[in-house]
Structure formats: structure tokens, C-alpha cells
Length: 304
Image 1 (cartoon, rainbow, N blue to C red):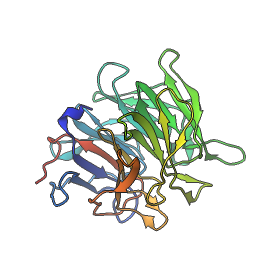
Image 2 (cartoon, rainbow, N blue to C red):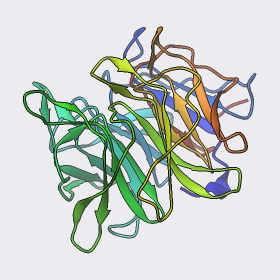
Image 3 (spheres, rainbow, N blue to C red):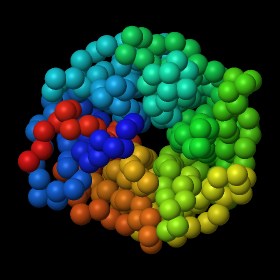
């Protein structure tokens, strides 16, 4: 993503609750009173999925194995995953072939089967990616200082599956994911991204999620470059899980999700100077659990 384009428009789609699973909406995050063009309904209902932008085209895959592209004001089917997935991690990368691709990791299918496989989506099709260290779902995926991290989630356990504190990093030389560190709090349905602190230094932030299967957390942790220990930050304003993590320029936005009071329409933004999350002036028109969201270039949607 080229931040010189000043991507300020947010597209949100899918999610559970209030008939939002096929509904999309857009916002100009710099204009609280602005109005954006209507985005048509998705052809299918999607939740627990991710949005990515490749070559200025928003892409979403999941629940079933269809992948859709938002082009010329409408969603169109353009390829299929090898496996139907939800609650996967996803990241737009250019590390494999020198151009942007959507790397999808883990997740689950119906009936519940947790994947350790990954798939790489291009505008031309899909291919298999490197295997994860272990099957995982409801995790977070982020690129930091040239490395790709798989953070938290739910892994297979005995006698029950359980949330994990494990953090893995992809090794380009061995084509494997290796254990990097452990969070202070195991969690699934967490949010993550790369933010700047008050000194302008980049770090990974992890926020919210759930543990003990149904306890929603508000804990925030940071990882600085060259470190393997996570530090505790200021809690989220509210406990939150299953929000969309939207990467911005030195900040991230947490969109929708589920709090103790139910599905959320709130948007939270990381304030670098205060080094904490604050509520954004703009909120969604529909409360959404597990939505997909991303910033998009100006040519994707018009706002006034």
C-alpha cells in the first residue's frame, strides 16, 4: 500500500448481526459529515473474513470458497479458494513474486475443521502457500520490519481446542513459521497492526480478543523491533473481540466487533501521541460482529 496516496476512505462489508452479512458501506474518515456512494450488496453473506487491496482492487474471500473483487462499483466473482474458510488471517504482501498478493492463513471450515494450510490469492488465481506451524483460527496476521507474524488465535488442544499465546514468524529461507515469542495474555478473535508510538517508532500492537472461550478482553500489548517480549499498554476503552483490524499510516482502526453489550458499530483509532485507542467520531450504520474492512484509494468509491 502506498501511503502517499493518503487513503482515507474506509470500506466495511459483511459481518454478523442486524442483517449485515451481505451489506457494505463506505466512509471518509476525514469528514464526519461526508456521504459516500452506496456500495451494492455482496452476492453472498460473509462474516469472519478479511478485505485486502491488490493493485487498487478490494478483494474478499471466505465462508464459502468464492473470492469477490469490488470493481466499477460492484462485486464480481473472480476466483475460488481451494478450501472454504472463515476466521482466517490475511495480509496483502509482495514478498513472493514482486507484486501484490493476498496471503490467507489458517481458519476453519464447516463442519469445524481448523486449517494449517495457507493460500495466496492473485488477480489471476490461487496457489498454495507455506504451511503454518500448527492449525489455527481467529488469529491475527501482520507484517513488521519485513517479517510476517501469526499472532494468537485458537489452536487444536486436548481435550479441548483453546486460545493460544503463541506468536510465529515466517522464515523466508526455510519457508516455515517458527516460534518467535508469547503474548502476556492468550487470546482469540484479537486485533493487531503496526502503529507508531509518541517517539515515532513503529511497533506491533495487539488488542482485545477473548479467552476462556467467552470472556471478552480489553488488554493491549506492544512488540518493538528486535524484542521478543511483549509490553502491556493502556486497555481498550471497552472490551472488544472480532473487530476488523484496518491498517493506516502509523495507526490502526478497529471496526465493529463484539463488546460486553453486544455487537458494535463503533470505530476505534490508535492515538500515537497518547499511545492508546480512542473512539472515532464516525460510527457504522449497522452493528457488525466479525466484519471485513480496509482503507481504499479514491478511485474505489466517491464521497462528498
